[in-house]
Amino acid sequence: MILSSLYVLHVYDYQKREGAQCPIQRLIKEVNPVVLSTCMRHIYVFSEQQVAEKKELLPEIVRTLQTPVLHQKTPHCELLQGNEAYQFLLFWIIAGLNSKKPFADERILADVRKKCRSYESTTSQQKINAWSVNKIVMLALLTDGKHLLNVTKKLDEEQHKVKERQLRSACENCTWAREKGFMPLLSTIDYKVFPEREKMLTHLQEILMLKETKIRQKLESLTKDKTVLSCLFSKKPLKFRLQQDLETIQKMQKILASETLALEATGTSFQV
Image 1 (cartoon, rainbow, N blue to C red):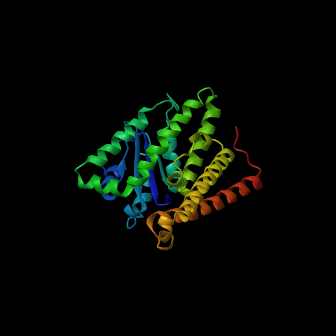
Image 2 (tube, rainbow, N blue to C red; image 1 turned 60 degrees about the horizontal axis):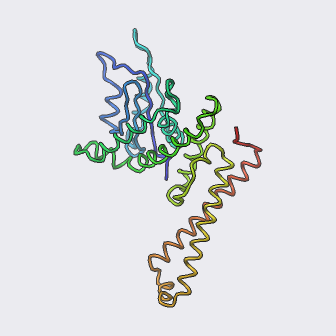
Image 3 (spheres, rainbow, N blue to C red; image 1 turned 135 degrees about the horizontal axis):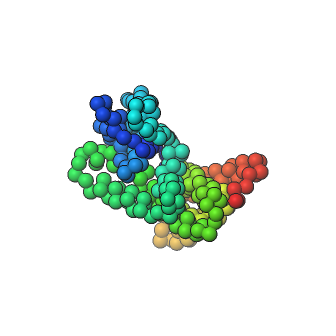
């Protein structure tokens, strides 16, 4: 999945300013993001193609939000892009930003799922357009968020600071795996490995090797089957798909090898 085009605007503790154009309403009107707001936290998800001809708009909105106003608290505001944006969404959806119930509030994921369903079933053309652009990343977020939320439950006995470091690493590593394309290819990924980089790399390598073995066995069985022998020379869908999967696996293995070497070179251990 290409995450480089993903944008997230995160605003917290915002009060609409009287007598002035609301920068948030301007964003909604001109960019048409997917809106994931709660009472205090406002999160807007959109793609680079939605702001392709309005690049000056984003810094202007951020600047307006960060400008102090007399008798009003200046809201927290940050504009995130790419992997950083997706990693933030994951950490938020597993309640990493919840000071009262850190990593123990499933309502956030439930609310996001409900919001996504409303976009999927809407008759509003504006929302249909917003969803069509951001659907892939939002559905990926729901999947990854669900599994990482289960990981938080397995770390319940950890001290908060230790648990927070582990889950930040989990979000970072999950984002990396998602961006590199491992998720669609490997349906058997165990999200429990994501808190530790080394374990993640080893796990991904193991299931890649297993998938490669199964594909080669399938291709071999096709070769031995005389009834489908002619198919091997005609780019039939099954053979062609299997060959494509093999090529993808080889690319993924190179990515893992490179990442493992980099990890060994730095002597970095992600174990806490």
